[in-house]
Length: 109
Image 1 (tube, helix red, strand yellow):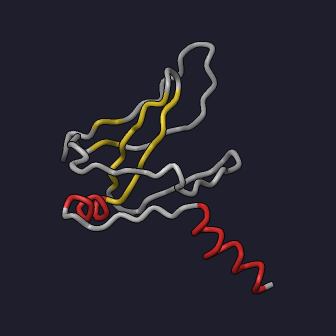
Image 2: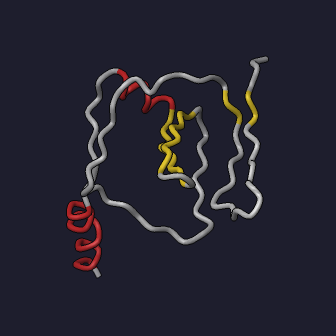
Image 3: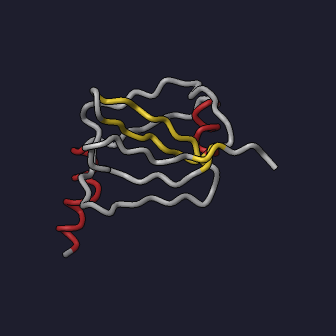
């Protein structure tokens, strides 16, 4: 069996948890390609309790933000291989998202 690295949640005294991690790391590697996320990229702001569960191996990049914050970029291992092989990356802007999904939904009502 592989030597898995179990992730343990640690919370410094006096801090409040913002997320819970539950996974095991198979190994570490480099991302291998630069990903640029436009400031115009569409974001969704979610209520507490938001969850994502994968049913395949994943690749996770932890991005430090300031002194006390992080973000996670998570993708399937298959998507990561596509990235490494030069597949085109497309980031949906808020304008594109609105015209493609939100405005269309209003028209269909």
